[in-house]
Image 1 (tube, rainbow, N blue to C red):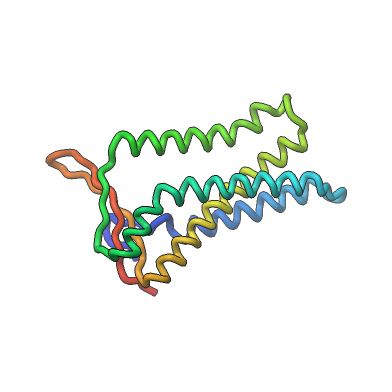
Image 2 (cartoon, rainbow, N blue to C red):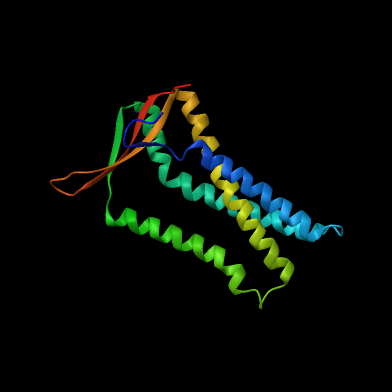
Length: 175
C-alpha cells in the first residue's frame, strides 16, 4: 500500500495489466481483420512500427529518469527531490505533442498512403505504445527488486510559497 500522498512509480500494476489487454486486443483485431487470408506483409509492417514505437516510448520514459535511477541506486536516500520548473512542464508538453502527432499521422495521411501501411501504423502504434510502457514498468520493478526497495513518487505544494516539489521516495518492498 502506498503511503499517503504517494504513488507507486511509474504506475500501479493495474495499468500494466491494461497495457497487456490492449496489446492482446490490437493483435486479435489485426488477426480478425485479415482472417481467413493471412497477410504477412501487414504483420511485417506492424511489427516494424511496433518496434519503433516501443523503443521510442521506452526511451522517452527512461532517459529523463536515468540520473535519478543512478542516484537512487548509489545513495539509497530517503527522498530525492526536484523543483517543478517551467522547463520540466515544457518537456512534458513536447512529449505529449509528439505522441499526439504520432497518433494522428496515420489518420491524417489515410488518403496519401496505402491502406495497409495506414492500418499497420495504427496497430503498430497501439501495440508499440503499450509494449514500451510495459517494458519500462518491468524494468523499474526489476530495479526495485535488485535494491530491495520500492520507488514512490510524490508531488507536494508548499501552501506559503506555492512552490511545487516533486520527488521520489524509497521504501521497503511490501509483499
